[in-house]
Image 1 (tube, rainbow, N blue to C red):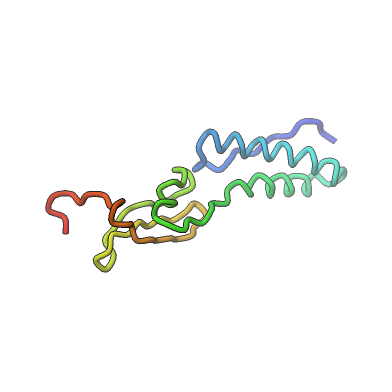
Image 2: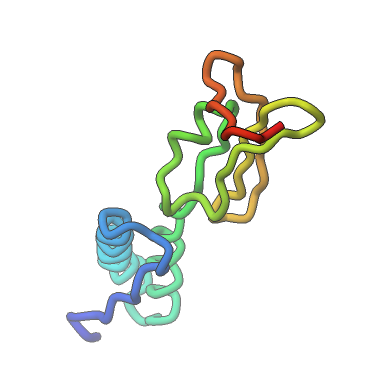
Length: 116
């Protein structure tokens, strides 16, 4: 059994801080998996990847304000649009889920000149 392992590269869309956390989770889970599956390198890697990838889960926002608070790497698309006459914040999270919420009147950004 090898004592060192090559840690896979974290997904490219993650921030540096999140990528370091991902690598740390992989390393920790791999150490435990070596104890749990001493003769099965494939199961060790699978368990470690599963643990590290759990960090990729994006919490589901429940409001426009929560969309704004998501970290940049957690969001593929985040923008404000007018939908049926209502200012709406939309986003697509890194795990592919889509959300949209009306923006409360006090939090609405000012529309650029000439915009309707």
